[in-house]
Length: 330
Ligand SMILES: [Mn+2]
Image (cartoon, rainbow, N blue to C red; front, side, top):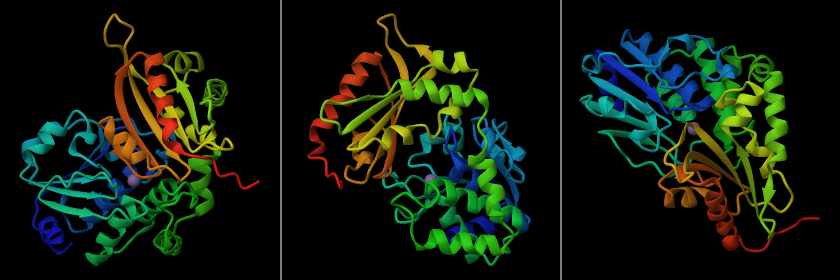
């Protein structure tokens, strides 16, 4: 932490970046640290290669996040947030990798410890928790804009304080953020309260796609490009839908197969997919994701793959053989 503060305070122009297809933590941590470093009169550029999901566009200064990095040579330091590996930032990874000093701030168990400085705490509920500690260690004031970013990061990464990463710090920091000016009901309304009609229709198709393995331990939900086109929705509208597949009784692991934009990769019917995995806590899905070249947390992980859809489903079903007996409470 000391070395990182030293590095940040002596940098002229700092690039901050978080993972593509960002969630609330990736955006919250990016904004919170970026706005804080500006209080130290640092020149700061915020980068995320993806469009910001509509539910996070209420966050103060969110419009300052740039999709492209025009002149990477101008940065002396890069801070990479909520990324297990540098490649998670997306297409700018190579350009960012050439920035002289890289600071890696993250909480994923699969973090590869890239960069010269690491602030990796796998027990943190969110990267926003670590960013909060860093801001406090720098002695900076947390204004309502920064507080809202941190609060949103922790709220969303803990699934509204429901997931197994929900720790004491989640409550303690969120309380402090409310004292600093966050309006919990307003944030909840932005993040969870409003679905477009298209998203409701997508939910309908996604629920209808759910299949469960013979032993009942694994569910698969599929979201295709066709479903998005039919409902007029964007890929981020599928965020969170996997939780419905996870809630089915006896299901230990839910997989959301998401067909990616680039479509067919060859004429044998193979396509690009992203697979999100969610666990009930009895299966470490980050280990599964790692075997497919992905990563994440014990309870939530993911990987990308090129496959035929039917082959991919079979591969995922085969995983459920190792999940053991269901433990039903009732
Ligand atoms: Mn996170």
